[in-house]
Image (cartoon, rainbow, N blue to C red):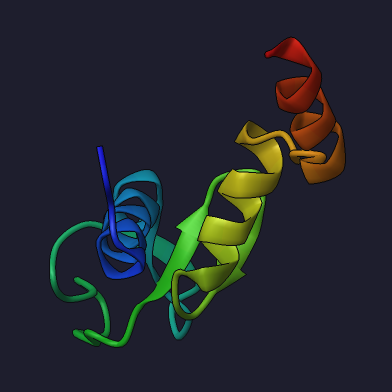
Length: 85
């Protein structure tokens, strides 16, 4: 499977929206739907339970990568593949 950077970014952004809630900072609460039922704002932050609240999804993506991915040692992987053949 060959995935482009743009496709990967789109999938990670969609995942970030799936795992977070809309958060109305003015009312300081997570809300469902497209508008806050109290103040009627649609300017939502993203809320990740147990992690925090912030605008955008980049911080969510970074958190998910840190929590669920392991760093690759490219030099070690290269040597492993080189000597296995």
